[in-house]
Image (cartoon, rainbow, N blue to C red):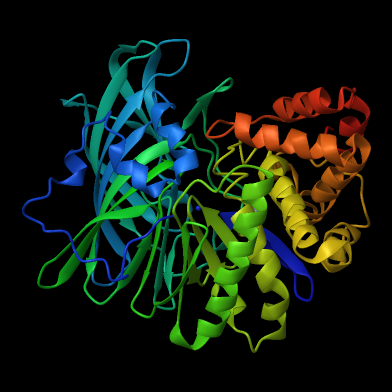
Amino acid sequence: MKPRIASLLLFSLFALSCAFLQPTPTPPPEASSTPDPLDTSWDDRSIFKEGLVPSAQWALNELDGATVYHIELDIADNLSHVNGSEEVRYTNTESEPLTEARFRLFPNILGGKMEVANLLVNEATATPRYDLRNSLMIVPFSAPLAPGESVVIRMDFSVEVPRTVELNYGVLAYDQDVLALAHAYPMVSVFDDEGWNAEIPPQEGDVTYADASFFIVKVTAPKGVTVVASGRRVGFTEAEQTQSTVVASGPARDFYLAASPNYVETSINADGVLIRSYTTANFSEGSQSLVETAARAIKVFSERYAPYPYTELDFVSTPTLALGIEYPGMIAITSWIYDTENDFANEYLEATVAHEVGHQWFYNLVGDDQLDDPWLDESLTQFITLQYFIDTYGIAGSEEFKGSLEFRWDMIARENIPIGLPVAEYDGATYSGIVYGRGPLFFVALRDSMGQPAFDAFLKEYTQSLAWKISTPDALQSLAEKHCACDLDDIFNEWVYP
Ligand SMILES: [Zn+2]
């Protein structure tokens, strides 16, 4: 996410994730003869293949035990109520038996409401417990689930979408004729070395921490609305009043969609990736500039770190209070940045787009605990945004963006607060100044300390070896030390750790 810069300055929070459903002249597949994608067997990953570029398709043969979601979402005519059903195949990939599964019901802490009914575990009725202001649903198993074993959990749910953008930057909202539907399905929590991981996310940062998963989602919406969703479209049908689109997305750490009657599409094809942007017709010039920036950023990051994994990347304009928010294969950008007649917008568009595109590498491809270690996604993404400016415009052409990093840190008088704290330990000003300012400057210092060739090789191996996994501060430091054949404790202690 990219928080905004306060007033004149920055309020900076970039947020994150996508695929998509909609126009393009693709003819609707014949409804009768094609099997329902939601009937795809749990282990059949062929439906995801065309959504991945060839160099990323290796992931389909790996990730044993990744969670598979089959979801149906029915969006009401008012675009602010959703009825859904979800079937999840969850596999115990831990080394100990599990007695329960845990799901996040994020709308309950994002200003909306989510209720779950008809919960079944392997077809037997189960009674959940709730915690964290009903944003955590604990599903007990009738017998412990051994390592390597799987369970199928089924439920119905409803979502009321807030009509304001006051909480968490408006990631989940229906406002200004745009539905931004983030984290609006029961989402499996991460089980890591701390056990089941869940907390209430602070307002400043990103909401989720998630494992790479596979999603097949059928979205039914009123006709006349353009629906843009994570993943690649694999089915489309129409009824009298409604349209239904099926998307397949994965590996991916979340599922997101946006919908509006006012969206107009702008697209380009860049090196095998279809980049689309959706906003109102009056902002089409900004939309064009945005997709061209995204194409440049994808090229820089693909060459430097790892190929962009998907065949599509979709941008949607939303009323979010962040500058932008990342989702897998999809990015929400705050609407005003599309306005080419707004000087502020012209100033922020390129950095915001490059930053959000960067999250496709650091957040989605390489995951991390975004609440405990925000520097692993936000600070590193700010650094690679600087790298984008260097590679695109040269050192001189990158000075302005580098100046914006210094500026954020200057705003809190260059306090030596560690960059490696959890989001909850910063306030709004220090979160911006440290995680988005001092954090990327740490990576500049690390690069200068290691030397460019060793640093470049380190970051490439970091990205590729941790693809679709969860990174940690230790993993980052030890890989950097391997590449410089040196001890980096001093520089990490100076910048990162408390
Ligand atoms: Zn960000």
